[in-house]
Amino acid sequence: MIKKILLFLLVCVLILLTVLVTNTFLKSSKQIHVEATPAPEISPAALQHFQGALAFKTVSNSNPALFDSSQFIGFRNYLETTYPNFHGQLQREIIKDFTLLFTWKGKNPDLKPIVLMAHQDVVPIELGTESLWSVDPFAGEVKDDFIWGRGTTDDKINLISILEAAEKLLATNFQPERTIYFSFGHDEEIGGSGAIAVAKLLKERGVEAEFVMDEGGIITKSQIPGITQPVALIGTSEKGYLSLILSVEEEGGHSSMPAPETSIDILTRAIVRLREKPFEARFSESMNGFIESLGPEMPFVQRMAFANPWLFKSMIIGIYESSAGGNAMIRTTAAPTIIQAGLKDNVIPTLSTATINFRLLPGDKGEAVITKVKEIINDDRVSVSIYKNSLSEASAVTPMNSVGYQKIATAIKSSYADLLASPFLMIGATDSRYFGEVSSNIIKFSPMIDPIGFHGINERVSLESYQTSLWFYEQLLKELN
Ligand SMILES: [Zn+2]
Image (cartoon, rainbow, N blue to C red; front, side):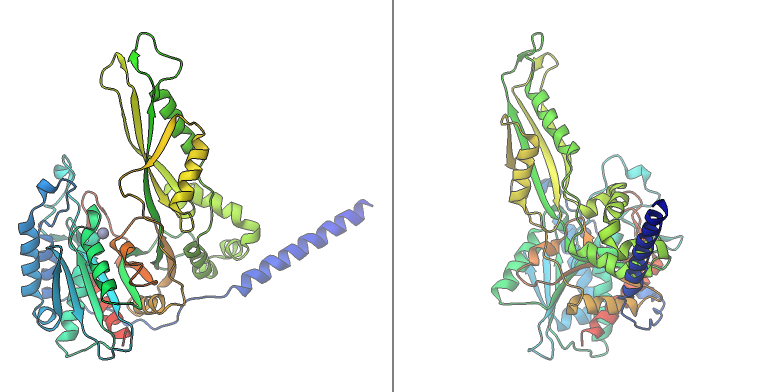
C-alpha cells in the first residue's frame, strides 16, 4: 500500500516537473534582435552645450515668490543661440510664458505625428545641503567621467540630447516623415501647468499622436537580480496619484482630564490601520510585460519561476514586497506625509488632520481607493476628503507591440550593445500624464545608465550616459522614417 502511495507521489512530482520545465522552455526570448552600432565620441561642442545648460538656475519652487523668470528667459535665449538650425527651421510657440512647443513638419501628413517631451525646470537645492555637494551644483562640472549638477539626470540630459540630435540631423537637411512636436515644460516639478496647456492645445488642434515619449525608466547595469546584461526599462504605464486628508474633530480641552479617546488618538489609530492593511498585491500589465521580456533571459531557476506564475506567483510577490521599491511596483501604496494637531503642551486639540499620499496601481481607480480607505479605517469619526485637485488616475498601458514601444526599443538596442529591453511601471509622475487625450501610447524612458543623485545631493550622469543618450535620440529620429 505504502509502495503504491510512494509511486503515485513520484508520478505526480514527475508530471509537475515536466510541466514546469516545458513551460520554461516554451517561453522563449521576446527581445527584438538588432545589431548595435557603437555611439560616436561626444563632441567637445556637445559637452559644452550640456554644461552651459546646467548653469541656468531654472528652479521650480513651490513658493511662487522664489521663481526667477530671468533664469528661464536666459535659458530660452541660450537654447536659441546654441541650436540655430532647430530654431530657424522649426516653428516655436511659447506657452504659459516659459513652456516651449516646437513643430517639425514631416514630409508625409498621412502619418500620425509623435511628441517628444522633456522639461526645463529642476528641483531646488534643499536648504542646508549646499555644503554636502562636492561640486557647485550649477557649474556643470565634469570630473571622474561624470557630468555633475542639478538637473543633469532630471531632465536636462533628455532636453539637450534631443536638441543636439535634431540639430545635427537638420544640418544634413534631414526631414522627418512624420511631424514631430517637441514639448519642453517649465514647471514639471510643481504640477506641470505648461504641459497641461500644451496637451490642451494639441488636442484642440486635433492632434492624435502615434506616441508620446517623456522621461522615465532608465538603463540599469546591475539592478535586475539574475540579469548580468544592461536592461533598458521602458516605462509603458505610470502609477496614479492621490492625496487624502483624514480629519477628526472631537471635543478638546485641558490635558489634565483627557477623555478616553482624543482626536489625536482616533487619527493615529486610523493611520495605523491603513499602514497595517496594505492594498492587494497584483501584477499590472507592465509588470507582466517585464516578466515576459526578462524572464527568458534569467538563470534557469528564476526563469522557471517567471514562466510558471500559476505556481510561483506568491513567492515572486514575496520577493517584491521585501523592498520598498519592489513593493511599489505591485500595489497601490499609502504613505502618511503630513500630520497636524495641537498648539500647546497642556491643551488637547479639537482638530487633528493627516495627509496620506497614495500611488495608484493601474487598474485601481481613485474612487475605489477612497471607498477602500474608509472601509479599512472603519470609523465614522474620521472624515476623508481629497486634498485639492490631487487625484490623477493611473495612465493607460502602452502595449509592447505598439509602434512607440517597438521604435524606442529598437533605437535603444541599436545604440547600446548587448542590451535587453523591457516594459516597466513608472512609480513617479511625469508631465506626460496629461497627454492621455493626445495619444493612447505614452512611453516614459530616459536613455541614461544608472544615474546618481536624482533630486538629491551630487546629482550626476556618466559621460557614457550622455553619449548613449545623444546616439539614442539620433537613432530614434531616423528610426521614425
Ligand atoms: Zn523630471
